[in-house]
Length: 95
Length: 163
Image 1 (cartoon, each protein chain N blue to C red):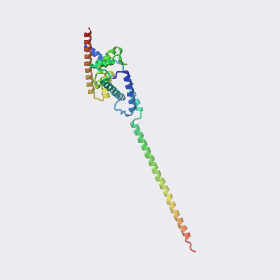
Image 2 (image 1 turned 90 degrees about the vertical axis):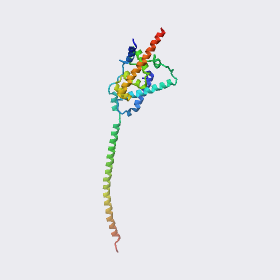
Image 3 (image 1 turned 135 degrees about the horizontal axis):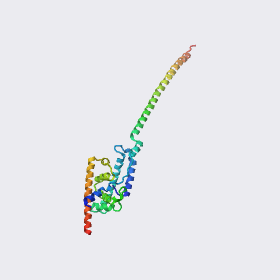
């Protein structure tokens, strides 16, 4: 065998060798099941929306509660005033 | 690339540990197979650099003839599960010659001709252009031809002198 053929034989010795082959898409399939960044971002966004809604509801609730309480306070402060006037009139009875 | 079963097993373990640790940093810009190939190539090259450094510091016996030294390193211990039995002797010489190539030529040649990856995938693993990979493969083949040619001539001369 001459030199060139010998070299070609050596270089072709990996031809037809068996190689392990993984099924297509197996890695990508596994990757899709992993929690990745976009999912984390969605979760953060949802939590943010939920927190904002709760805060707004609490805020609105506080305003309604305050208005309701304030009405009672106004009534309460007006009536004792009248009673006070009555008491004063009793105390100033002249013999 | 490393050609020693024990080294290959250590590197495989290391590669999968790295994959496990950094799987969440994988950015889907390439396929996961390409990404794992890249990690494996880098780990193998790191290992070869360590071996080469040890050799330079005198742990291995230095020889002037690279192929002869490489061949002696693989003699008797050459194992490759995919190589057909009748090709084993030729493949042993080829792998010995591959180990004399510069790093980038070795990587390109092993990925394309031993792993059987298409040149496009080799370019992705090595983060090079397709043209650069073609050029590397051409130079690798030429260097292998030169190295094997020198080995052929020397062996012929040895046979003549022994007669």
